[in-house]
Image (cartoon, rainbow, N blue to C red; front, top):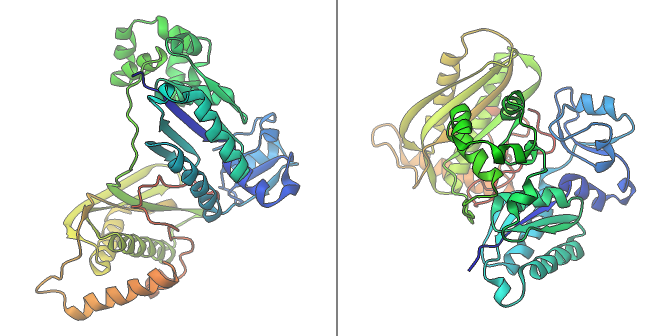
Length: 404
């Protein structure tokens, strides 16, 4: 039985959601992303791309390139609801699928040709999504994830493409090397210096040459250029860590603001652990200075999910890490080495009263929202909450207004 992998991608997802909510935005240049000086473009309509706008670009640059564009901050919760609608349709239609991101899916249709026809079935799934959600969507179909993903990109906007078995290498050959997954800006720069601009050139290079230049990553590039990929579908994403970051609108050394943000992050992440019956064994803090130099410091701890253990530790790590006394651009907190289990009372340091307090606080948050209750030391830190369960197997969403 030959493998058949379907890649589905919702076109300009955030933009499409906004247009469904407001039909006046149809066929108008539209940008979704951060509104501040450090905001980035999370999504842009095709009307803006002819001006050189692309996602990930600083919003102030995009506005300068396309001044007539409508700019919307966006709402992550709204986009998640649209994404969940699509997920439910795919879940009902295929036996195995992977949700790679909020707007991107892989599905295994292997064996469907014996009964129905993979391409025909994929087309019907796409038409159902179009009909029931109104969201434009494209797909690529081939024998593996990499070729299907590239085919989807070539099919856009709002179209579909099938690459027959044995034609993968021929399909990839004329395409630009940047269209190959795993070739980022840095890798492309090195390949350009070698005179490589198309995938066909990579296909003709000796494998040893790419391995010599890029190590194991060179083998991955060469294999994918040949249309070869054995990556499995991952139907569930088991989280090994959770984290959150905050980029300030203006670089700061205000210790009250910095500690308030860190305390709110530490407290919220601890609640996420307890809600999922998880504990962390390693805590780390990240600082990015105004010169973009980034530093992290971590510490192993006995497995815990208690605020009174984690919050002071985050403060301790930040105090020992912040030694340059420069303006800070970003701070972040990460809990890793996560295992399942409940927080256990320390026989000599804790008491039953403290445990009851945590349970009462979490009941309030479960009912009224994760930001409904917080410590006084965390008051003033806005939008720290994640807005969802990080352990539900779903990939994290990049907030439309998140600043990088």
